[in-house]
Image 1 (cartoon, rainbow, N blue to C red):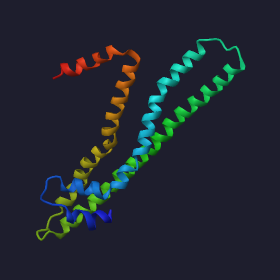
Image 2 (cartoon, one colour; image 1 turned 180 degrees about the vertical axis):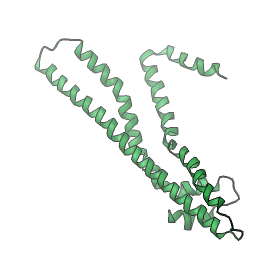
Image 3 (cartoon, rainbow, N blue to C red; image 1 turned 135 degrees about the horizontal axis):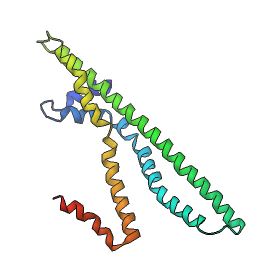
Length: 182
């Protein structure tokens, strides 16, 4: 938080409308990107579910006849445990790191706004400090979803590719409702 206050914000053009946002993102770059690997892992585990379920259904639809089939059954149980434990753990780590980032941004913004308010020559009123909490809550509320923006694009692309792989040409029918909205 002090790094943003002391080094980055004064170097940004403070008359620019989005200067504080970019200064905050530069100061919190590590905190922002540290949640990317768990979010990618969560995406991977979510896309592993349909493949796992398909394989389990294929396995239970045939009768178990050999020890090889028993080994496959044990492997499927292990894979199921791995996928669902992976979803739980990656979700926990991802959410923890996201909340840590949001808390860091909140602290940096509160400090920056408070310092600026105190340094104003016309500081006689406590109203700006009273409204500061509400304004920062509004800004921070949007930051909870910052990783959903890029991960949704990746998930849509992977989902469309997997759909194309399964049904081939009718895959393009997915775009009709999208085109119809415009």
